[in-house]
Image (cartoon, rainbow, N blue to C red; front, top):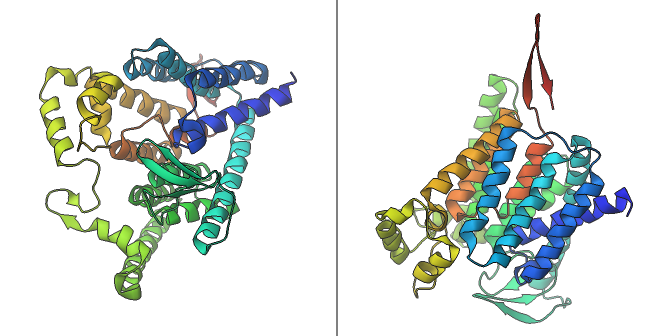
Length: 402
């Protein structure tokens, strides 16, 4: 196999991982055996792609070990643990590829994803315009029901919302936010408008919040002077105020943005805001009781969580608390430290701080740190590395970028 073919097989494999992280309909029912084959092909392709395996660093090795360790908490089934270990090893190969190849991979993945989202948007507009388009018919997966139009799902769970090829608008919008970050929110790039429109039509509160915060923090740390930073902040708050007023008054408030986003931001005495639907009353009570036990330290695993929590009728939760119950407080702290250390040591603060902001905000919201945002943000960090190594000599100390 030529190196060029191996490289494109490797890129296709990473695209598969990215789509599976966003709960793409094509990946959610994939058998463990097929995933083992796919991840193994990615790893084998890596050994053909790399020119020379780069020396790793302590914080990168720590992150790889912590990622693979998470597989222990997933299940007691050896085959599923193997799938997860191979998944994280596949992702970890990114750390050992030279920067030029990493940037090529990033550009190709960005192009593929732009085409997929653009096709999905076209299908979405055709669906709601009433045009007949190809479909695989009515389908059901767990609690999700939809008409599968291949590139776009017409979801009965989220009527009117643009879910793309994902089962939920939240996962889809967050993936688009990560690609906005990957493209530095640069409005000179046509793909950025595609991702922005996808986030907008998802009507996902989480997607809106992360897109705004990510753009705000990235723009702030990449603005050169304090005068420009103040000007930027003023323009931002004026723009948000105008959007709020227009959406509130347009058609007397009867519009999608006001009803699905702004109304959810209203104050609620119990939940903080109306749109805070991360867990219901039953879930909150059960979490409170669990956190008072000694099991909080090491968790109960995914199967234990399924048996004692999510399988109970009326239970509904999706937040960082789910992760703590499954993985335990000890592993949660280790993972937070490992990923944060990796970001701040691997890239400058104008890159690492925006990445950490949207990553941990998503973690608080969904409790799924290995899904959706993960691989695109790793690509963003890896293609903007500025790891400094101090070399001591008799006369001078030099700093080099790896």
